[in-house]
Length: 202
Length: 202
DNA sequence: CTGCATAAGTTTCTCCTGTAAACATGGAGG
DNA sequence: CCTCCATGTTTACAGGAGAAACTTATGCAG
Image (cartoon, rainbow over all chains, first blue to last red; front, side, top):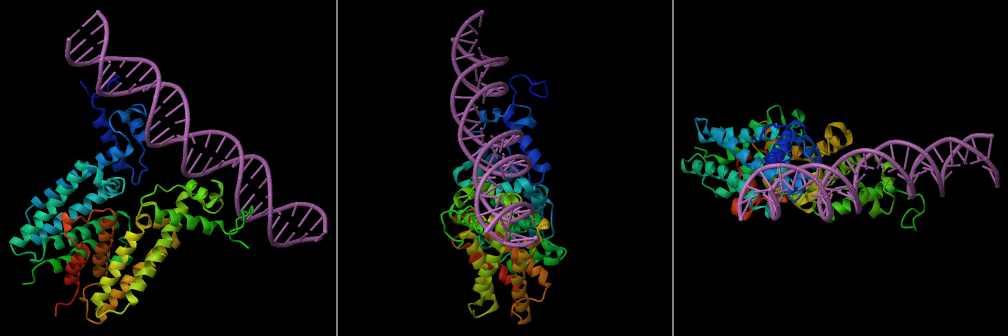
């Protein structure tokens, strides 16, 4: 009895409702200037109501970012569970999933890596980010064990591939991967170059 | 007679003064919430004065971004003019210059790639970005000519290296290159991995 | 030199945001 | 049944964006 009544004084689960509204707007309106009041408005509550659930605007932003990391992690896991002929192919699938996620949720993705989402002061957010990063690490370690990836320090592979994928994602959502600059299929092309450096040559 | 008088009614070169103030604050206050009024205040003019030189806040932001690309281009050119034993070493120098630039001007760097700096509606900004990107392209083409870099499509090398460097820069200024994740020297490590894929193996 | 058009400032005003404080409501426990 | 408290609402205030109307100096026509 908490859903869709004609606004009983107590909402039922306003916290979650606010988060969903915010995620909705973020998904709908490409680069929206995030506004607590707008979130409250569209959720149908007074502009001060959110403060009962979030100390301030930034706290909601960090929660959204955290959810973003969780969802990104799910996308990665999904992409990797499709079976692929090689670890290399699996890597490509995961990378494309990440970039696809960014392109489908540009606002959220940007938020996840913005300075508003300060991971140093928010343990849950930090943990979510680390956990998602861990998915990449696992893949790399697995690839090393089965001799797909070179046996250099896994942290080097991690830095390179994370930077590469994140860079492609950011450039893609900034609309900077123009054909005149980087050809018509920059993502697979770039990943191939990187993978040639990561994979065993024999 | 345009500098440092005791505020004649007409400033002399307010446009430039505003830009400099903004760049100053951006350089000083790591993640500052950009405010036209603050810029006006610190420049010593009324809050409406900037509107005589910039249609709106975004227009000033785009001009700042443009200057950012010009400066980044200078940093890259400088770094590449130091002579290096190999094109590969030159690439590393340029990459580190770019990441260094980002770390020393995080606010500006973020701005350059933010959605506020919409390159599709600002030809000067777009041109500045393209010109800086051209420096990278030149280096890659030169590397291909002297057989340092593989003869794959130069746009693929460009996409890969640009994404890599930009990704490292963004992660660095977001304070996400934590040792626990990517080791103690992620930048050279990541670049090495990438370069192993870009360079000729023999 | 006089006088005016205009560029470049300033003031004032409206609307919006974040956030705090005081107030209201209704459901849960004594 | 009454009272407490979490969760709403209203009201208030400080700032920011930007428009409009006003002011000042400057350069140019005569």
